Every structure is written in structure tokens, then in C-alpha cells.
Image 1 (cartoon, rainbow, N blue to C red):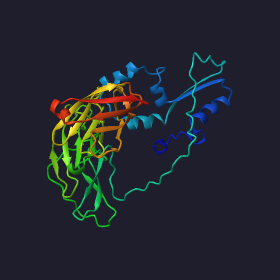
Image 2: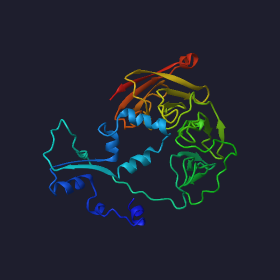
Image 3: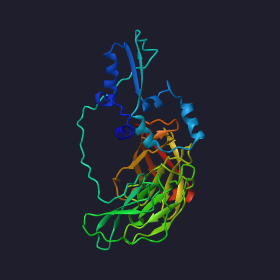
Image 4: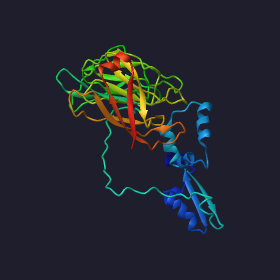
Length: 337
């Protein structure tokens, strides 16, 4: 951001001296302003004092939008400040900025190194494939490249000689915001995704877990989905898909169970069902017994229909038996945490 403004020869000089919201607030307080309120643009977006939930939802009708990561990042770089010289109003009339409390526990640090020659890729997917010698390699696929959706593959290995991978000529079209879930011996399930926010796919593909990399079309999702959550049911070759967007403005309230031999089943939610969200996380716990048909995990996070972060966390349980596939019905139970 600073490079951009410096290039335009309009550098925001105060940024170097006042780099946080608190320092900007204190800047005005120290100069005699008796009451100062400050919000970064994401806080303003999230506050009904500036934008109502209905107004946020109506924006999707004006123009399809799915650049949420860029929007949040952009909004965190700017702020709205209100300074008054009169006595501060009562707490019932205003909401002052209060910085979020820092966690008391220690913060882990991580060193990140770039891979030379790897092109930029966002909203892509990754999977492990094994060559004929049993050497695992990480393949990153799809996603958004520097200018458009990518149809390339990046291959990473601990060995210096990776070699050129063999990939089938047919396969899924370039897309973003799909899920890629490991299904054991059945390979990897690529589900849904989108071209543009108004061009959503219900296509599903199975990619082999070994070289040569083969793609085979499989059962389609009951509805097109992107930015959904997916997890492998630990110890099985089944996948569970939750939430996501079915178009630029509507969210899915459904939960789908996938069996590579039998296709998709819609699961009915029971208990404290989560609010519809997209971009959430879902995980499955390891099984306690090898041959059990009971699975459990967590479902949390994401963005809700009002364009705000969801702070909900749910524990889910799922029981699967042969009758489930015979009746094509399944129930997933939720417990709010």
C-alpha cells in the first residue's frame, strides 16, 4: 500500500508515526480533542452504526462479489475517525473503540520460505501423490494465477530430481474455491468450485493417489457449490461436505455425504443446527474403533449471510449404516460449543 502511494508521489506521511488505531486515537487526544472514536473499515463494515445487515445483503444483488480475502485485507488498512471537542457522550449514545485483548498464552512463530520458480496461486488445492518408487510428492493444482484461473500443476518433493509427472489429458476445467479431499485408496475427491461467482460447478472428479495422475469424473453434487467445507471421515473412504455458496448471494444449508461407490446423500440436521456460512472449517476426529460406523468432529468459522465472521463452533456426530444407503437418508447431529 505504501509503495503504491509513494509511486503516485502522495505518501501518507503520518503512517510512519502513527501505525496503529490506538496511536491514531491518542494522536487526537493529545491535541485536545475530548472524545475520539475510531474504527478500521472492517469494524465499520461489521457495525450496524455504519452498515445494516440488510444493506450488506443487498450489495450481492447489485454485483456478484467473492473477493472477501482482499476486502478484509484492504479494510484493515484504512480507518474512520470521529473527534469531538465537547464533553464525551454517554456510553448509551456511542461505542468507543476498544482493542481486542491479546491472548495470555505464548504465541508460536513460524518461518516461511518461498519456493523458487513456483508461480503465485490462490484458492487452489493440494494433494499427495506417490510415484512408482513409493516417494510422496505434493501437487498443487487449480486456483487463481497471476492473471486468470490456472490449469497448471506445481509438484514439490524432498528429492532433488522430481521428474516430469504423467497427467491424464482429460480432467476438470480450471476453477477456484473447490475442495480436494483425500479418500484413501479411492484417491482424492475434487468437489464443486466456480469460474465466476455466477458460474458455479457441481462437477466432481476423483484423482488417483499414484502416478501417473489420472482424473475420472464421478457423481455430481446435488447442487453447485463453492467455498464449502469438506473433510474425510477418518478411517474411511467417505467425505462430508458442509455449507458453502450456491451462487453469488445464496448460501447452502445442506450437508452432503459422499461414497465413491454410491454417490451423494443429503444429511438432515438435528439439534442446534449451525447458521449457513461459507468459507468455514470442518474436521473429523480419528475413530476409536476400527469398524465403527460412528463419526464425529467440529464445524466452525466462516462468513454468514450478513457478510460477517461467524464465531459459532459446533460439535457434530454422524452415524452411518447400510440402511442409510438403502433409504438414501442420513442424520447429522449438532451440539453448539
